Image (cartoon, rainbow, N blue to C red):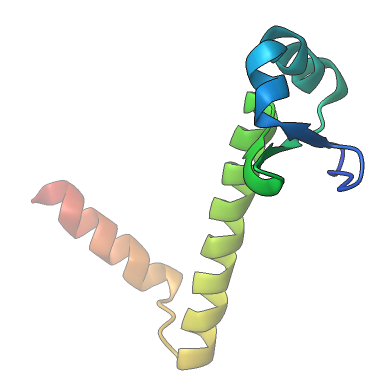
Length: 94
């Protein structure tokens, strides 16, 4: 699991990013901690390891699917297994 951002430690000025990009990218890979890029003293972007980013997207997709399922349950829009199989067979034949 990726390490969480430490707001007081993981701040990098955009100038430092320009001058030390290779070192910063290496640190992202080894320490697996995102960094906040500052521009004019304000947070402008977050830079993180690609693997952690992809994992975050997968988790988000899963959570969104769970929410859609919960909403379908609450609104009574569930379809039983027999109906699903009937619809799938119809699609396969057409």
